[in-house]
Amino acid sequence: MVANINLKELERKAFRSVFQDGLWDIFVGFLFTQFAVAPFLSEQGLGDFWSSAVLFPVYMIVLACVMLLKKYVVAPRLGMVQFSKKRKSKFKWLILMTNIILVVGIIAAVFFVDLSNLNIKWLFPATLSLILLIGFSVTAYLLDLTRFYIYGAMNCLAVVFGELLYQFAGAVHHGFPIAFGVTSSVMIIVGIILLVNFLRKYPKPSEDFNVEGVRNGSR
Image 1 (tube, helix red, strand yellow):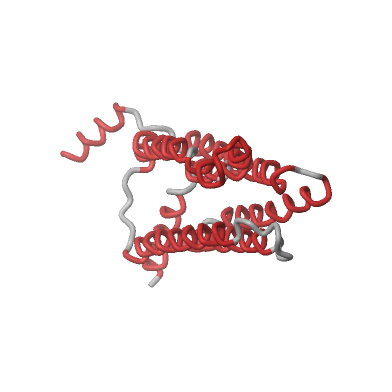
Image 2: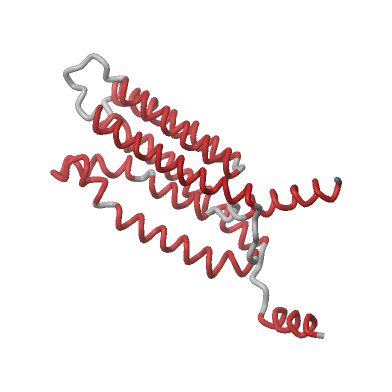
């Protein structure tokens, strides 16, 4: 029984270590820069849809860099880990919930795109805040990452803070460039700090060590 508990705890630590390199924090931070950058592109004539779509190749490049770093920098330091079916199912649930939240977000954006003549201007910010809070909370729960709860609360409040800046300080674009410029920067900076700490904590094994390990294992 004790051995079983220890194995589960070891697997939990190994599972969490996969996300302690900060690379996904950096990627998510870059994703959220669209809330800060897209409004300015929209006013240049691209419109709401294309102002976000034009940034898609940039995010794909960032994602490709993350995957390459995972493969050639992180994996050699941690090795390959085989997780249980329960852990793998969490990944599947995460992908499903992410797609659902994305679809709901798109529908909400289209449905509330023009509220200028309605007396419910608060509805879109409230809906966006709720979507962000739920999305990050689900991710935090499924991946067992406490800091993503903080990201969720931070981005949820960013919508409110941006709207307050818009209403009382005259900030452009509902204050999104300022509010999400801050939150995305925080996530990217946290990711960079985690990555630096990860590289210091897990130095890459030397070639001599690997060769010696193979020789000893073959005896």
